[in-house]
Image 1 (cartoon, rainbow over the protein chains, first blue to last red):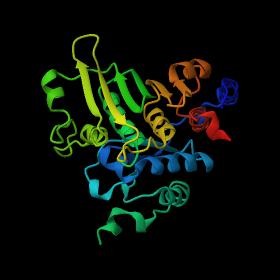
Image 2 (cartoon, each protein chain N blue to C red):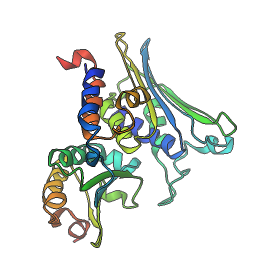
Image 3 (tube, rainbow over the protein chains, first blue to last red):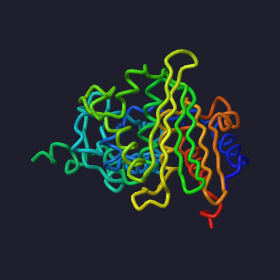
Length: 123
Length: 180
């Protein structure tokens, strides 16, 4: 069982480190989390993204958020990546594993994983 | 939905959308019944909307005129011999209570699944909302987590959706027997 003392330790470690706060990033990864997304497996995709962004130390650059129905239910789970001055990238039929690869190659490395995008899926 | 925890995540998002500042999620197991309650202080629904809300063609989404969240929860409950009830008020104190009852020994009763993952996902999506989660199991074990209390420990500088905090919450939501 986790104790409140451990939570206090996290606070003490983090409270002066304001830059670690999420929400300041220039890249936004948005996961569709309406009924369609959830039923298709969006929850593990979101967890994997949050975990990987934290593990790769991208907390300052990347914000992971949730949204409702994107309107392309047959392609769920969907992850959209928004970055200033760049075209939106839509990843479809995602899994936790694919999400980890997107985190590494796209969010960290800046290279779109073309094979997971909606453009590739529609071919 | 393959597990009840996915219905929880889905239906609790209605409470978020209703502008709730506090959402109570309870799973109570006793006498062979599992009761899920989702209680919020959001804007509530007028009676005529409540009357049609388990109809898949009633929805607040704008992308298409079908909403499967509550219909799927209702189906999951009724296929075990249980039921779904909704109480809601648009006059103060506003809010909505959704209650679903499941016969636990029924063949079609879906497992609870990764409830911790769902609660963590809800907190990650809406760190400003107070979530109270209580799980009282048939074997008498109980766990509860109140993000209002966590926020007091964390103070104003450290948000609940910080990855380290979310990992702590995930751990805090495990029954002790599962840790071994």
